[in-house]
Amino acid sequence: MATFDVKNIGHLRPAVPREEVMPSPCAACSIRHLTLCAALQENEVQEMAAIVTTMEVGAGEPLIDEGQPAVHVFNVTSGAIRVYKLLIDGRRQMTGFLFPGDFLGLANEDTYAYSAEAVIASTVCRFPRRKVEALLVKYPKMERRLLSMASHELAAAQEQMLLLGRKNAREKIASFLLMLSRRAEQRGLAADPVFVPMSRNDIGDYLGLTTETVSRTFSELKAKGAIELLPLGKVRLAQRERLEEIAEGA
Amino acid sequence: MATFDVKNIGHLRPAVPREEVMPSPCAACSIRHLTLCAALQENEVQEMAAIVTTMEVGAGEPLIDEGQPAVHVFNVTSGAIRVYKLLIDGRRQMTGFLFPGDFLGLANEDTYAYSAEAVIASTVCRFPRRKVEALLVKYPKMERRLLSMASHELAAAQEQMLLLGRKNAREKIASFLLMLSRRAEQRGLAADPVFVPMSRNDIGDYLGLTTETVSRTFSELKAKGAIELLPLGKVRLAQRERLEEIAEGA
DNA sequence: ATGCGTCGTTGATGTACATCAATGAATAGG
DNA sequence: CCTATTCATTGATGTACATCAACGACGCAT
Image (tube, rainbow over all chains, first blue to last red; front, side, top):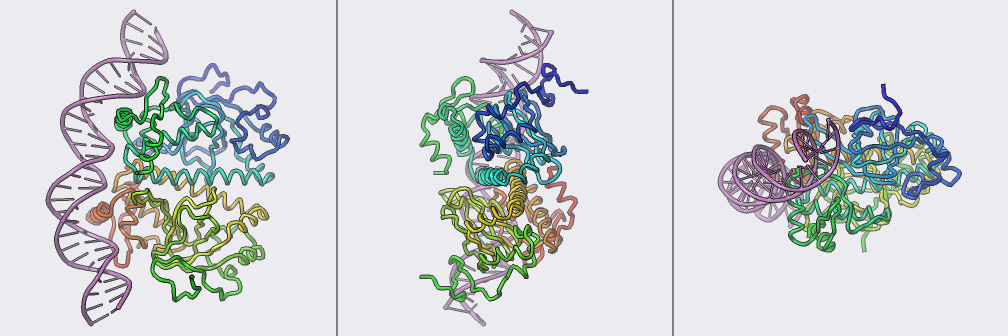
């Protein structure tokens, strides 16, 4: 049986709840303005705080398994999460990378329709789905906020379909780097030497390419002077304008 | 200046509102249970009826142009609508086909992020976006219904990303035919000789393929006995089980 | 330190699908 | 009714990317 001692979390083992130390982690939440909770007043946030479990998820550890009962929803508070679907022979399609503030767990059916894992060590807020749904009824402005977030995601999904169906490898990589840069900027993080925490393989599975093609395309953009590959997974967008043209198919 | 005489609608001209003849078309709406309006009671529907404009859209006529102010939202009531995005050199990615009951026009920004046209002669209910938003505030259950619809769409979008990024031509076509069949079934229409109203080119732009590859793949599936191509755009799913295996990547 | 697995890169080769092209069938417009 | 497009199909050829393969760099565990 699983223990709740953090030290026992093995590599690739499911994440387990961390003992709460703070009375209300939400009060001090520095990214609340990015999350679902942004819809709530100070005093109302306490109702979320009352049902939250803060969790640490080690690199590579699963958070959600496709097909499992959808009992929780999550807010990412630090790190990076990959969301994906699999074909039965193991082919994988990443459907998104999530960063602090992003919401996860929306489900129609009673089971999750996708899987999610930590790309790097991350923290998430976990809420019982039923209790959040009750709060949505109580606070329509939170439901409105969720609709707005879903609507944003839908627009991003359509953009990604355009990428997957109609862009070539160079356009895909340029689009990807710019997307990461814009999202970092929204969060007040470095937009230019942009942090790319995921592997070439992860990127390939997000863009509908193989590891090798991703690597070659990075090399090609580097050779052209459009980007610079820095240590620790940082990429400098040396010619952002050029990248934007490439991404748009110009 | 545009006239409101229906007879003057030319091919590929924007659709124009049709004069209302019925006092409340919503009262007689046979597909209301599929739409956003399903959330409302008989008497409440009248508030939607009060702001609706019923429109006929001829085959090929535009309904929404990407980049235009997002002033309306729509419910499809008959026919079929294609939704797509373009790259600047004209490459097109269909992001969805809409059928009776489907909702269209959700937008975060003040402009549409995609274009939409009728595939075949269709009818839609048009609502002023601002007024619908006001009704969403008044009727939280309608907002909940919209969130549920958006959530469904999001799941479908993720499924489509898996298709675009990781399936081959045969798997894409099999998935597409099954999707059309399931959606027809939901609407109480023929699920087996399934009606495929869109062109090979439209299908290609939906699946990230060319016209020729779509045509060849249909031929291949026909040769294998998995499907039968009938007149008037009907396709018989002669070996549905086999198609399902193919679609899943088995 | 040493060995081992993962990761990134690059090269050689293969292939699924795109592109180019031709033709017949279906459809719309005068 | 007849002609002009558009649409679907099939063949020949090209190519972007996948696959197979090798190797060095790095991180991790013993």
